[in-house]
Length: 290
Ligand SMILES: Nc1ncnc2c1ncn2[C@@H]1O[C@H](COP(=O)(O)OP(=O)(O)O)[C@@H](O)[C@H]1O
Ligand SMILES: CC(=O)N[C@@H](CCC(=O)OP(=O)(O)O)C(=O)O
Image (tube, rainbow, N blue to C red; front, side):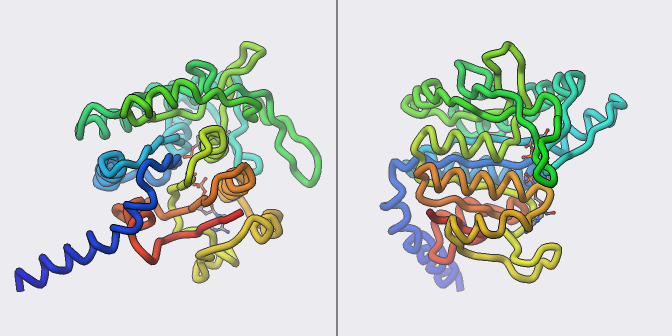
């Protein structure tokens, strides 16, 4: 009995061999969504996966969100908050809370979780070293531009500081706050920020962790998860997407059109979903290809 258990473990390791070979040295940008970081044991598992990737020779970079955490902080402070086309309408007052929660709280939490496993994680904000430069973004509703406050669209990425950290064997953990050339700070959707960084780094993969199995073909029906689609097929689906899936799938599209060979949307509620996606033959979630 004990031998067969041990053998199945060996089987899992051997199944990983071709993937370990092909992803050695690969740069992987992982978007960690606020909804995927609700439970303590899942957060621990996420940190373990990221450190595992590092030890087997990949170069992981984490870009994180924290939407639910921002909403709860705004709520406690009695600041009202709404979303338009999947983006938070961000007043100057709300922007201070967004920055405090993303860079001051969520970023530090993830850095702490990873660093319990070794001196790897270095936290940074998209504002640091001109990583993300943004300008004001307008949401498009029924074809018309709508003012949504201090929400940013990334117009320039300077990945120098991130590259230096990876070259030094570190794992950069990046919050999705950006600076503007106009002196403003901007709230950038974290999916969008992760895609921009993946393109700037010529990453091998963008992986987006969220709180659904992947992209559903007929949402709100959740029986049919699309396992694979190409950029043109995704583009055709875009007008039918709603809420948080809009920036997420736009991010996958931007990544693959920007030269990233694969973008994945995975269920962050599944323990060790990152390892399952990268090191098993089946993979999980939805994969977008160019
Ligand atoms: N076609 C779709 N497939 C899957 N989820 C969808 C779809 N359309 C809308 N959604 C919604 O998008 C949500 C994911 O976006 P969001 O809540 O912003 O996640 P995160 O915090 O991980 O960025 C899902 O929980 C689901 O409610
Ligand atoms: C402009 C905009 O909507 N910004 C997001 C930034 C955080 C984020 O994207 O978090 P998740 O990945 O957890 O959704 C927000 O304020 O909620």
